[in-house]
Length: 415
Image (cartoon, rainbow, N blue to C red):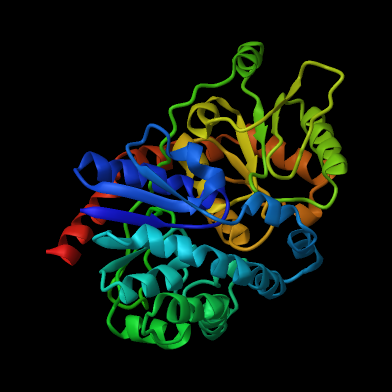
């Protein structure tokens, strides 16, 4: 089949689909990944075709409006600001996504673009399938991940989840209008379309493990957990980093991925101070935050984008922003972790890591100082139960196949 996978957002919203796409391609499907042009290198060598779409998420996150997310102190406030940012981006991507879907046999839509991908598939009379990296449907069992995941009780959790769904619907109002006026598609509005698809049990597979998040018992039929989709990545570690790893005991990796921070210089200094206070070597990743470990010694190194699958298993612990993609990479590596949730689903994944026993605690970005990070580092590296639990989980994840359920659903939808 000719399969198009649509996604948008940061690297963590794209990389898992390169691995999934490669798996589908190995099974004989012709797969195209449609997402921001910035991420075309991620698909290189995977057997997956690439269809570039407009919008540079790095530029958006570093714009005045993007940095304005830090002005919001609540999950709902951040979500509303993010929805405003995403509205124009969704409309800008619409024409390119329609082009990618023409000639396809099925549309696979990531959670970030699910309403739009589903609508495009409907307008072109194609079947579609949701591929979500976070649990986005309302449930009474835990707080809405995109609001940070804090439980508000059974009723509050459900209402919070519905509020997120409503906010996401509003993101795509202009994009849906564009589908009607420019592409001649007879479509309902986002909310009406979602309700109709929910009644029809539109299928959604989730790219995480049930060992990490159990399927909520109050989810409707059609919402299932597939297992992780590991990114395709054939890179090697830079020579300088290999030399650093060989020069001493396993270091701690610190990186915030695609998250931005208000004051990178100050935060970098606090991180280095915390590492030295804890008596640990460190690898600091620049990331989109622009962290730089200026050091007068040889105990800390600064790196750019490096393959997590190769580096993380060789570390003493990983400090990260608790995005879905990095959380998956840490669990796969089987090492202790300290989540530093910044926004959106970071709080949800951070809480899961603590509950699973692989992290001693979370240190939210707004409270991250040398005084809070150093003791967390000592616990993560010094309390053996965190590494033991991490290794146990990694062994379980290694036996799972997240691609197989997707293949089975494709066969069912197109037979």
